Amino acid sequence: MSIVINLDVCMAKRKKSLTELAGEVDITLANLSILKNNRAKAVRLSTLNAICKALDCQPGDILEYVADDDEDGKPSEAAE
Image (cartoon, rainbow, N blue to C red; front, top):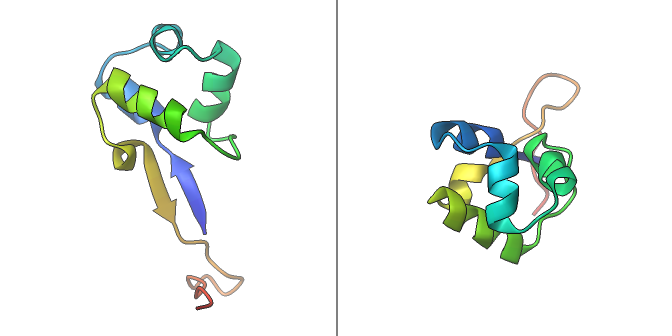
């Protein structure tokens, strides 16, 4: 399983640049770029809150769960 960050899609829909959003959210351009390019390992809830406020969106507009495929090409089953 993995979480995909669709920040670039939300930014494009609202016509916000990386520099503009970084200023509004008060996050460095480098850290926002890591998040935008789906290379982040974690995101603080306060940062997610600020991004949602700046983009007028919901967390689900930015974060998406995608199930990984196993070696046979079938979705892997989560252990309960």
